[in-house]
Structure formats: C-alpha cells, structure tokens
Image (cartoon, rainbow, N blue to C red; front, side, top):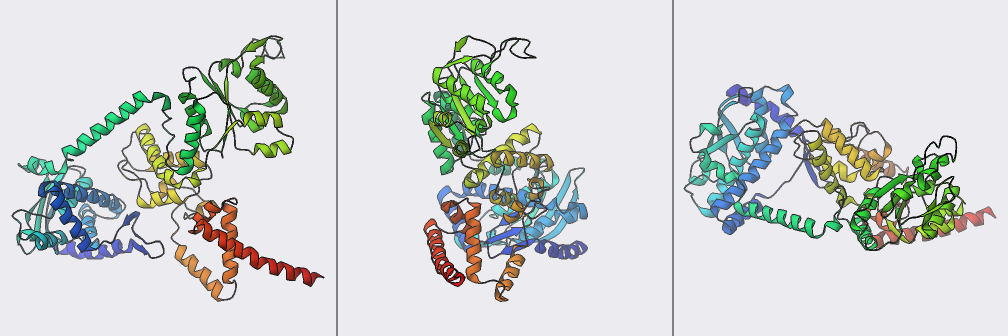
Amino acid sequence: MTKLRDKLRADGDDLRARVHFCADTGQIWLHEHRMLLVHAEAQASLRKELIDTLGMARARGLLLRMGYASGVRDAELVRTRMQDLSDIEAFMTGPQLHALEGIVRVVPVRLELDRAAGDFYGEFLWENSWEGHSHRRQFGIHEEPVCWTQIGYACGYTSAFMGRSILYKEVECAGMGHDHCRIVGRPIEAWPDADEHMRFFAPESIADQLIDLQTQVVQLRSTIGEKDKLPADMIGSSPGFRAALDLLKQAAAGQITVLLLGETGVGKELFARALHDMSARRDKPLVAINCAAIPHELVESELFGVEKGAYTGALVSRPGRFERADGGTLFLDEIGDLPLTAQSKLLRVLQEGEVERLGDDKTRKINVRLVAATNAGLPQLVKEGRFRADLYYRLNAFQIDIPPLRERREDISLLAKHFLAKYAAINGKTLPGFTDRAKRALTTYPWPGNIRELQNTVERGVILAPHGARVEVEHLFLARGDDDAHEFGLDRDGKLDDRGPDAGKAFCESVCDGAMTLDEIETMLLETAMDKARGNLSSAARMLGLTRPQLAYRLKRLSESAAPAAAEAGDGGR
C-alpha cells in the first residue's frame, strides 16, 4: 500500500492539471465536466433541511442516490485515463477525485480487484469527512453511520468501474464519535443483508406514483387531443417557436392557404405535416413535392398530370400531385424555384379549383388545401420578375415565420436530448447524455444548417461515443474547421476553444500598444454583431450581453459621433 500511495501522489498532479478555473465565464471544469465550488456550511444547511423536512430515512435515500450519481460521473472520467494505468491505479482515481473535490481524504487499507473476473474487495479510511463532521455538529452523536452521500459515491463509482453492483458499508463513522470513518466494499451478493441497504438506492414510492400519474396524463392528452398531436421531432419552448406554433394551430382550424417562411433546415416540412394532422383533412392524403428538385420541363406534368401521348415519352396517362392530394393537403416546398409557366397555371388552379392535365382538354375538379414553403425572399423575386406578384399575394394569405435555431437557444438542449434518445435506440446504445462541455458547445454553436444540422451532428456523436459513456465534444464536432465554429467557442479541431484568455490578452496588448483605440474596438463589435444578427437589434444585443435599449443607445451615440467626422471630411474635400 505504501508504493500505491506514492504512485497516487504523482497521479494527483495529473488530475489537478485537468481542473480549469475561468474567472471570465464563472465556470470550473474537470476535464469535460463542469464542477461547482460550494460553501460547506451552505451544503450542510441544505442537508439539515432535507432531514428536517423528509425525515432521516428519506433524506438518507435521497443523499445516497445523489452521491451514487456523482460517483458514476467520476467513473466516466476514469475511462479517459485507464489505457495508461493499471486497474488499481485507475480505480484510485475516484478516491483522488473525492479528495480533490473537498469531500474527504481517502486512505487505502486493503484493495483487491480483478475487473475481468468481477472480484472486488476494498477497505478504506476516510479522514476529515465533511459529511460526518457536519452531521455531528448539527445532530450530535448518531447511533448509525451518517456519511450517506459519500457512501453513495463509493457505491456508484465502484459499480460503474467494475461493471457490476458493489455495495459499501461504513463500519466506523465520525458522526458516531469515531476519530475517522472506515468503509468496506464488496460485491452485493457477498453481503447477507444487502437488501436492507439497497432499498435506500431505489426511488421513493411517491416518485413512482408521480411518474405513473404523469404517464396517465400523457395518455389522456393523446386520446383527448389527437388532432393536436405534433410530429416527434417538433420540440421547443422558445417564444419564437411557440408563436409560430400558435399561428399554425389557428390556421389548422380553417382552409386558408399557408406560406411557411424560414431558412433551410428549420423544419418547414414538419410544420406542414403538423398543419395537415391538426386539420379536418388529416384522414386524407398529404402530398409533398420539392419544386427545386424537379427539372423545369417536368414540373407541369408532376403538378397537374399528363395524358398518354402528350409528349415524347408519355406512354401512359397519370394524375398529377394535385389530383393525388384531392381532399387532403398539397405541400409545395421551395416554391420560389417554380418556373414562370408553371406559376401561371398554379394560379389558375388555386382560383378555379380545377386542373387540366397536359395533352387533355378536360378539366377535373379538385379540393386541395395548399401549403407552400420557401427560404427565398419572394418579394425580392417579384421585384426581379422571377415570381408572379398575383401568385405571391394568393399564397401569402397566412404567413408563418419559423425562426432559425440560433434564435431558439433554449430549444437546443431539448432537441439534442430528443435526438440522442432517438439515435441511441436506433444504434442499440445506452448513452447517459452529453458531457457538460459538449452541452456548452451545442448551445454556443450558431447552427447555420439549423435543426437538420443539429440532428446530423447528434447522430454522428451517438455513433462515435462508446457504449455506456457520455457524448463528448470531439464526438460531435469531429472535423469542424469552419470560421463560424471557431468564433462560437470551437477551435478548428471542433473542440471548445481554450485559447480565449490568450487571444484576449493579445487583443488587450494591441490596444495598449496604440494599434487600436477603445472607440474603434466598440465600433467593430457593434457593427459585427449587427451584421451577424442581420440588423435585428434584439439578437445583436444578446450576442453582446446587452439589453436592447443599451445597444440602441450605443448605436445612436456611434452615429452621432460619425456625423461630425463625415462633415469635416466633406469640408476638407472642398
């Protein structure tokens, strides 16, 4: 054990090197996991309140489970070091982390383990136990061991490390009046009274009841409001998304033509399908067509149908998309790419409610609700003569703007979690989630490809992440080398950019050396933010950490200071 302790002291330096403090962001990182530095007295007060509120037994179970979850997370970090260490050295990373986190100093007394065979026996001393001493101060000497969070941590860490359930017992405890704490860990089946201890690791029955009630509520909602059921990938709680969804629900009640506007990948087809499913036409077909994906010479036959012999190659008569959607909904995506000849015929179909196949002189009555979508500016296309004004006004009866993902920051985590569960099931993997740094990367990246890009990124992360581990930054942004990724906290290797402080220092030195002035820096920041936000004051203000009035004031001051300079330049010219 003496040699092991000497080795642990050396390994401790490596662990400490993985701890990073960032005063600028107010974050502490241990490898890819975000940590918190909490006052011990505040934690002790919370612990006391739990005991006073829930009672000793329920508080014990809650704190055990909390410690267990923390131990499992630390075991994930150990996986990044195991290839360079023996099993015992790798295992002792957990006790070192417990000490590094300020919980307790762990001194190994006896440790025997064989991961391949599943054998384990561990005996450790705990010195300076935070939990034991705080319990003793608040409640006095206790008859039973009280280091519940710490024993939960040991069980969670060792179970995750060994790949089997390991149960620890605290045979001596500072809360019982002992000088130190002593714990012994063995496989669960080696303890004859294991059931008595393991019951505390199971969620309380009240939690199960709440989950059952929640399930029943979901089932009731699904049966009562089946017509309001949304596609599974249509998730969000941001104001912009909710506003668009509210408009969609209002439009679903009628028959009005709907125009969906938004960037590529925001989910326009999902909105169209949701509109159809919520409408009275949901039992009839929804037919979708991408106008940009069809050659111009075939667009009319695809939309309106064709009679046999209408042109070379028309060997049989067939209905168009309008006829196939009769009674239901027709979704025309990328309608801005529709050729002018097809636009005029489309306008007539919408006005008359009837279609005429190519090569036919007979008209057919149709009853179709039209939903159109585009990521192009139709008013600009009208000005350029590439889109008919009368068709635009016909289509623009009810417009819904779907916000890009960069304006739905609060929805990114919800969507990422949904896609993680979806693709983990498809790939047969069990993944507990994302690391804290991966979560930060997901929420700071601008997502130019919107939800489609997020979906593809998470799917790649699921494929690359090891079974049972969390998805890390490099799994998500494996080959990311674009400038946008770098600007939003990801370096050219797709990782969180840790060079921020150095870059900031160089920036400050350039100001102090006279290369730039503070006014010039402010001007550059304001102009860059406005460009990125495409003139949207609220979005630009969020980028700069300002309120909208604060940004408006600074822009006004900037324009006022620029006016005299322009005037002086004009006088000099004369």
